[in-house]
Image (tube, rainbow, N blue to C red; front, side):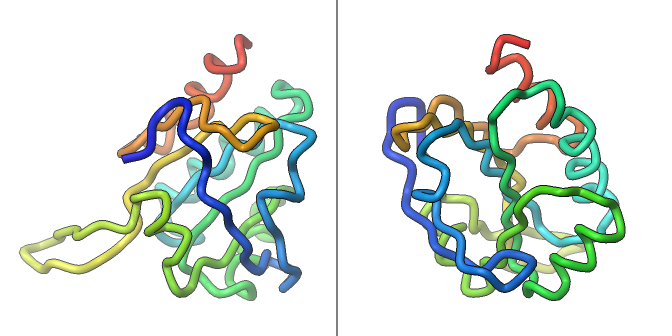
Length: 150
């Protein structure tokens, strides 16, 4: 697992508008990078909408969501809920694996691989300030505000 002080793994993925986005694009600000299992599902919608609702309270901190969904699905999710921040398509799970959030999961006795809902606050130099693994959708914005001293 990644922890405070670790260098954040690099990423370069397509966003909801099919534009390539890298973590390097955000070197002048802190970044909340959060991983969610699937766009437009109940928990992911709650998490994303709560983050949308605190944007005015977090200053220049950027919010970036990552899921295995294709860019078109990310765009639909963004528009449906007026999220207004970057959503990245990690269709090959490379970034999820680098952040150690691609895990074996189980539901109704069936095992499968998927995203473990997690969030990372990354500083301007690319170091992890906070790592929250197995975070609940409702705790993500609260954790961010506390970490930023808000």
